Length: 373
Image 1: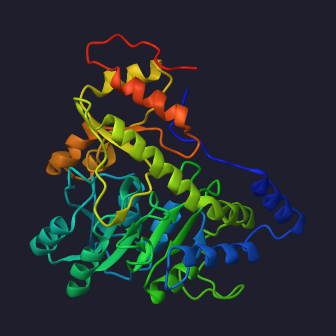
Image 2 (image 1 turned 60 degrees about the horizontal axis):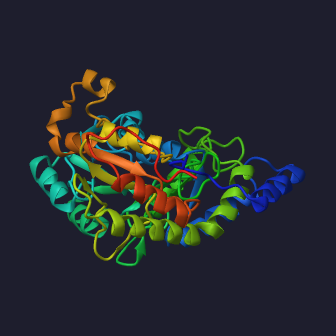
């Protein structure tokens, strides 16, 4: 089976972890600071970087340091992993959802403009650069600056993605990355907070370490969301490989799109002009999804659905009074999206197997093994 994701752990990572274990400095040590500096430089984050325990803890910290009145409205997308919206609730604020663009799967600048016009009480925006593609972050930043609205970039799936040659994560007030094992680079678990707003980033640094600028001196509320030195050591190794891995993802994605764009009943991913899409996921829009999944599984091709249900349509959010159908495009995409393997471990032979399997599918076909070897 060609898996939908395959984390890489090489001898360099193993040696780096062994060095940390031998040093005895396992928590917030020099490797963490080194990783923060290296990653901030990679994404051109003017305010620096703050390593944390996960992408989710980074989102929660970012939302919590905004210092907005309780219950303030924060605009976000309905089509993302649930942590994006949950971080808003975690901080005591109210998520507001805007529908997405059917080509990019993301909230657009125009949609955000309409939402801000409709509801001037919106105080912040959490954007999501979905599947490895940047959203219209520069245009959205112009809108936000003109209205005094804070912007957080959820970059959990977009390590190395660029708009107009500028990496995501350093454009908004804050940017949040995840290093979960399936991401473009990983640390096992872990995250990084970056951005252009030094005041907010400094607050995040306190927040993830019990609100303490010095040992046993607590100047604000905070929690233990620190990254360990073990995770940072892995991250430094993975960061070195990230550009090459992203290039491999793009090669695989372009080979798939070139071979599949004429297949009836599916739409290959749209890549925005002047953007570098790093293909955390290669996502088709398909008809007859269940049948295609069965066919691909029989052919030895792993698949996944990111995401089968919008956030407002989750049972918890419905219980809070949200209505999934209020975002009809997002609901339709939840019924159509299908991810195919695109990660760096996908070989040229694997790419051909995936192409042959997809092209051999017909909605009425009985699943058969194709190109397995």
